[in-house]
Image 1: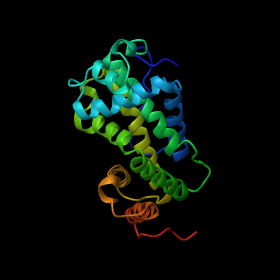
Image 2: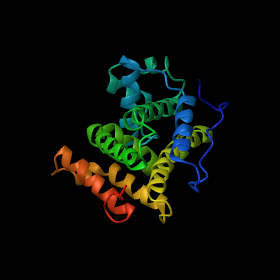
Image 3: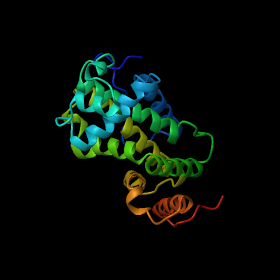
Image 4: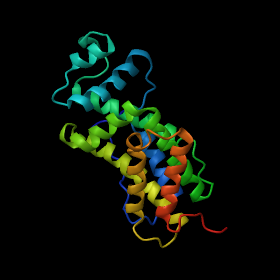
Length: 232
């Protein structure tokens, strides 16, 4: 499905976390399918991945189509065969990264498993994504948090991307609520866990991969309350 000004932006979560994790995951899946996500290979994929890195390093205004073409090893005019302008290229690049993130972190999740098991899988995969694909992951984070996509993309496209990220954060918070009914500040706890995942390259340099996953999970359990899974 083509994504653009005419496409309806997926509905944002209410934030009250009254929906089950399964319901939020379904909305996330539907939102993902609604985005334009053709399978990119070869030069097309190289253009998208180079774009995220260069946009993040130089900023939107400081990046030209020529810069991206040079990084990929093609002529600038060749990029216009795929994208009509720089804003559409940025949007497509972010969609490309989101699709990879979604498949890696959530794509294989079993919604029938207990909430604690799902949360464990999400944290483990998120940590592995951030550390294993650090350049791509940090580029995505920088474009959202440092520069702000709302400053450089048309409003409807920026809102669409923001909605997808918000749904993912809401899903993590809903798993916490499902595991610990009545827990206070579930969204703040989810944000703390995801912030730890996003910053993994800054605190994990002296750790082995297994130790990173264990430490991330220990942190999550501590935020759930008593630091250990509840009795069955």
